[in-house]
Length: 467
Image 1 (cartoon, rainbow, N blue to C red):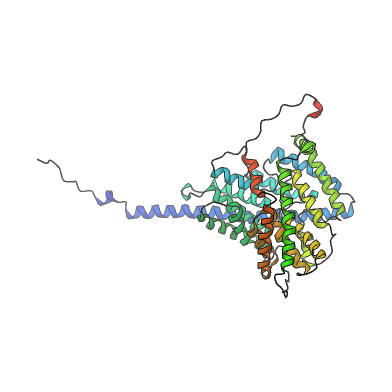
Image 2: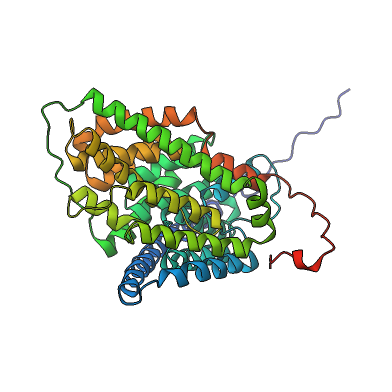
């Protein structure tokens, strides 16, 4: 005989939460969501403001350097070697991880997070961001051929990484998404090219990440871009160029010549960058490894010599020189592109913080000047310079979509969009046959464990000068 008892009735207040309790929980969750958004948007504002400060520092540094060179002959022969030595010492002693471009560091941080690797040392922090801005501007003032756009990627990612530690956990924002958003916002604010920032995040930083990160990236880029435009106004990086229409909008011969020239030159440049980063061969490489401070001083001396040969056109980012070529406002030495090519390679090899985006654009403009002098057909001089800027940048970075969009937005060259796409894709393809992807190859250096230190040599005279 069954002895089951009927279930006791459960009051409604115990069966489900009170309506008022549910509303309070929903409001609390909503407040946490908006708190996280406000913190995130504040970081995007900080990225835009930092880009403005960095731009003013670099512009002031270049102007001051030229002013001092005009009044004190040989000034750069003092600032470049001494500045290089001091900046590299400060970087190695207090800001390790701030050397070079900054984009490989962000890629390495994202890779180690996704693959559960552990980096020997952190590459993103507020301390590194501060060193990147201050020492990067100092390197430009000293005369080195570097830019601020690549460093802004690391600065933006560092700011977002710091913000990620303060976001409410219930938001569950992946750290890689924050780093990609911060890096893209940094380059968009530096160039004032929001569309290029989105494409850079997709093409270079966020390969393999989920599609849901796009909202974070676009929001950060828009906010950082608005802050930059609030200060600089609605401008393009190289000004508003009048790109005239030509009878034959796609001259095949000129396009092929520009693509081959930029593809081969960009591939060799990227290969040189990788060689200087992974270790120079022979005695020079051994001396650089044992005496990095002296090596940086020697690089500064070479940069000063190249500046003397080029008529002081290789110092700094190269923005002014590229702009003068695009606007046809003055003539530069025929060997400007070659000089800038070598000065940027030597500057990167020295180990000072600084990027290569802006110098690559000026190198491309110089190559366009040479190409037009040889062919003189198909395009007008300014148009040839624009094409070679896109082609050389695409060949170096092997990100053709980002390269042609950056150049298109910077010069308002929407009338040349097909030509820019063609040359960027062709130059990037040629570069791939010469060199592996630049930034991802450099990022692998940070993911590899550091080799064990070698036993010191007995003689005291061979003691390295590494701090």
